[in-house]
Length: 248
Image (cartoon, rainbow, N blue to C red; front, side, top):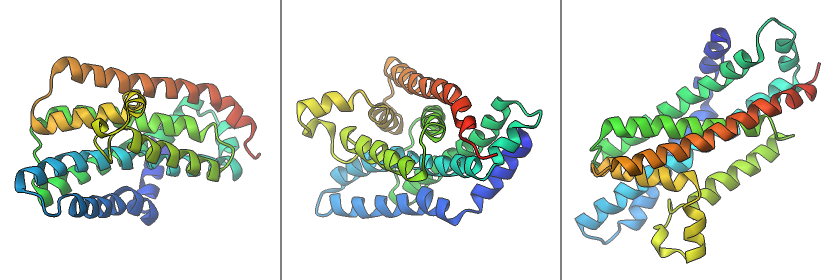
């Protein structure tokens, strides 16, 4: 497992396309939308907008890791790597963990870099760093677990890319990552509160402002863990079917 994890992590860190999707594009979007939504406003309003946009785009862009996860598993399946690994004494859970853990590290790096960018460039508040770290670990688990389940379920890369866009962009719109949830119709607000992006965004903002309430934090962590756990169970169930489709 460790060998797979190290090889995969090195490979991903050298992938310029992944760097673009995970770091450069989120930073560009953050700068662009902050400049748009803070034009002509007073300093207090500007800082309030920034404190919402930075964690909002962090939450939105972490979901794009699912595209890379789908690509990796589909390529392994279609090139015979999955079958060769299955024919060795390596346990199936070791293979999955070896593939999954590098993406967890990558998403954590992404979150840290984006928050540091916000701190250095826009002087955002990071009032409760420990809480921010706990939330980062939780959303990372959730996102990568969903990505793992999807990678073992979809038939093609294009299908995975399409579903990722729906989850990432549709979830961002409905969860209030683009526009405050209070400005949306009631039915959209109801849907938004069912999504993990909403809870992660709200808790990130509270932690940044130093106003986290323990019951609300525990509720967010429970929701994120529940979604991630269900996705992980789906991945475990889907793995035998994924293996059957693998090229020998």
